Image 1 (cartoon, rainbow, N blue to C red):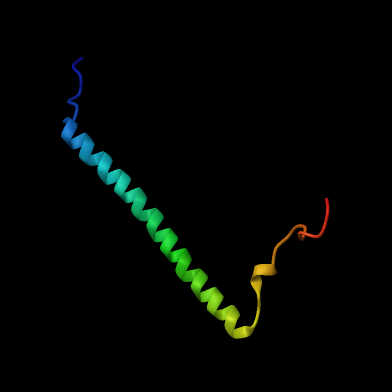
Image 2 (image 1 turned 30 degrees about the vertical axis):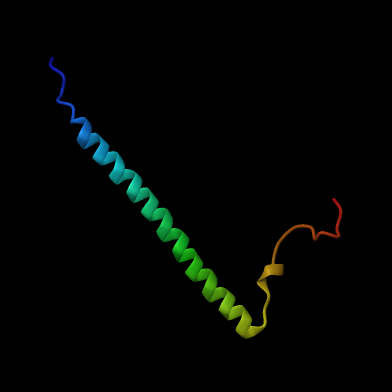
Length: 65
């Protein structure tokens, strides 16, 4: 059997650059989308007077385990 042809180093490098670029783009879109969502929630909280920063499960700093 003969070996299948291997893509050139230049094509492999270009494919790697595209793959890394797509992953970074997805991360950036998620990060930016989350910031827009957080901005909307914060604006809503400020308008209603709610403070969701205190909505958490667990011990407060004054409680001991």
